[in-house]
Length: 106
Image (cartoon, rainbow, N blue to C red; front, top):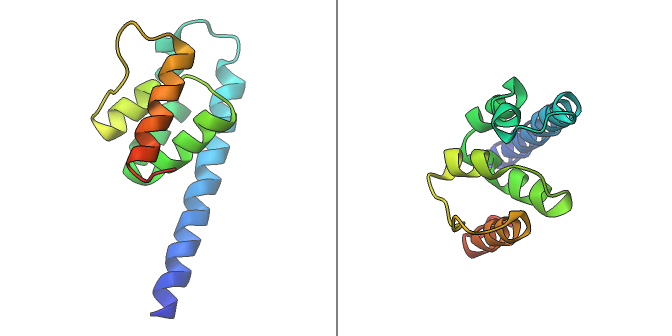
């Protein structure tokens, strides 16, 4: 039983490390891009999406810490979009954070 807990902790740390590295690369390589579409198609961003549901809490935590355009990733991974089309960026951030709290992800 104890080995499973250690393995789970190791996997979580590995996921967090990978996420942090990919996030840093994505931000660095897209900082001068104005197109959200291009930013969202960046290989690091796409790799984060491919990590699936285990990365949702990390994205939400990062969204809270340093708001950025994580919305496509959140929709792609969760299959949901709680944000209304008339929401601005700040309201979209708030809505996603509420969504995460309601699901126990943050």
